[in-house]
Length: 512
Image 1 (cartoon, helix red, strand yellow):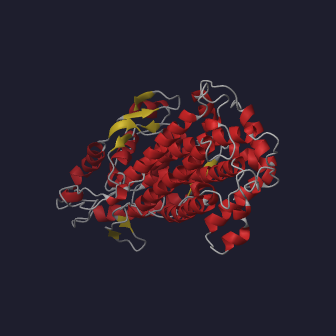
Image 2 (image 1 turned 90 degrees about the vertical axis):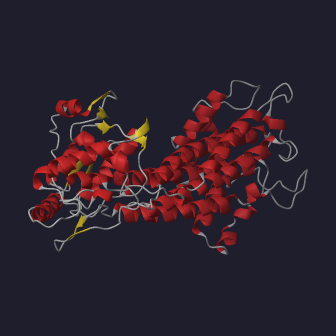
Image 3 (image 1 turned 135 degrees about the horizontal axis):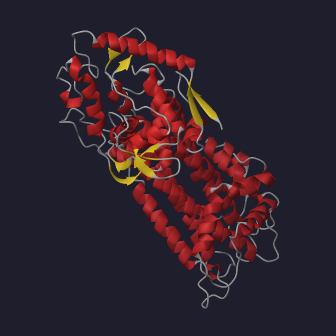
């Protein structure tokens, strides 16, 4: 099994994906263990002094004015975890919880948090055992960290609360730890706070969304090309020299992908035949501009994610010169903004995708295709309601594009008086990515049928490869009306698992 070694300088996106989705093992580097021990010595020295230090010998948030005596500090750390484990609602997905824990471990290993090495090792042991704490949908405001989600994870390290075992069964966390020979941690000064104070949940969801959207944007380029082909459009608008004079890199990449898919097509260039038109509709002609802008948004979000993956997010932090200083690095604004930005790009890509599907189904705009791509229009309804489903998804995506980060509700008796709502932005982006996958699948289903209905014209080699792979995946071609939901579900799986892009790249080489 693949192993990810966590050091002091952060982790990569591929590390997060390997642990969250691939079940990779986690190890602490010798450098990380040494850094953990060194920062712990600093915290222990401060704890022995009479002067109050936030997070070490004081209460938290609005209660930070109280100095806590040494005999109550272990109880203080346990209490912050128990009281903050206050999430509600449905369970969060296993991959999100694993990313959350792994990214908190990344910060612990930076040597800036002051926790003991054994606390970090226990977190690695829990990940390696396949134990997943039960985390709930609601409880994070995206400031002072993803508090409730991280608290539920910390609670499991203490042997309390509930967790899911590697077999999928939910049991008391203490039982699961014992079954895997893991001793619950007994928290000391600063450690409870250090386990809670990070933007790890929203960052983990951002990293996974970026991976999913990288595939989806390539998939959308493919389906846009198939729709252009099915509509007998012109590929001249994809010429590199046209995109070079408006030098957005995402636009150029999207146009290049579409051009690669359409190479050798016998369907393009017929826009002057039976129903002459000077230009294709915006949804066809401007596909690279819209998808390209989304790609550039992905690039910006990826830059933010890379910075966060290299960061140590905690409060207070232990500095190399021995100071323990409070800060505001736990604020989720940098991540929240790009999560919301991506949701806007997703909604717009879905919107232009749906417009192409609608055009394929409208006999007045489809340039010779049968109404709704039906076998016997009137007797058959064809793909009429598939477009309804797609339109419902697009409408939902537009609602999800409303930014969560524009809101803030003060908390902790006005001590935490401005929060990011980044966790909420991440949760709605996950829903949006799922919706976009389905929207692209509907366009694929419609465009593939439309291309096959263009008798006497030969589609591009890449298109033929898509059609062959799609049929092999159990998605049938044109014909009389049938139970459509299973076909659409199979098309969705074909997009989601990357087989659409794989089919194209076997012909074109890697898409951009």
